[in-house]
Image 1 (tube, one colour):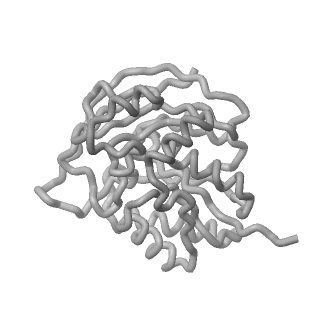
Image 2 (cartoon, rainbow, N blue to C red):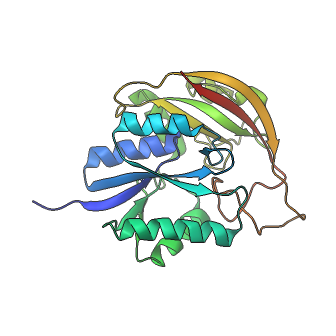
Amino acid sequence: MCLKETVIFNWSGGKDSALCLHKILQEQRFGIMCLLTTISQPYQRISMHGVRVELLDIQAERIGLPLVKIQIPEMPTMEVYDNTMAAALMNLKNQGVTASVFGDIFLEDLRKYREDKLAELNLKGVFPLWKIPTKKLIREFIDIGFKAITTCVNDKYLDKSFAGRIIDDDFLNDLPDGVDPCGENGEYHSFVYDAPFFSKPIGFEKGEIVYRKYTASEPGDQSTVDPGTTNIADSPFNNGFWYCDLLPR
């Protein structure tokens, strides 16, 4: 019998990583050692998604896979972020990991960044959703029976009314022209509360919707980064975000 390649799965808690995990589990080509999630250390929430760690823990329990959390300081420098990630990945590599799985779809710069950093550790990247049309992906996501809610929307693309909305046909029909249906350009982030591979759905209540604006110390400053952004090399400075808090139930 051929041994499966051991990988880590980069888990954001949102719809793209959930659909990506679904494909990996169906293909049965890889053995997943763990889910890997970056956490905003001061807030104890998933980076950029704004989801409480308590809900992340429930997701991992419902999936049935170990969870490794990487604690990232607020707005770290690229050097701090890269060093923190490298230390975590090297530890996992020493346990037998050879590759890292991502749910990226079409952002070339982001993929290159990931692959370059992995190559420094003699690891490789796996991208199961790569270049699949996002309209097809979101349709598949809904039709399979995944359930997700938006937790963060970028006010450059979407207004407050899109925060805390269930991702369904009505949501897709209401998206403005030019907004990617999967939010691949950072238009929105989400939390999956039911999936084919969950042991049971996750109960939650919608909490407060709050606005947060990221600012640089100087205009155009790219010395720091929010590690949950769509493009690591392009921080969301001077962008505002609406966050819908979700409370475990």
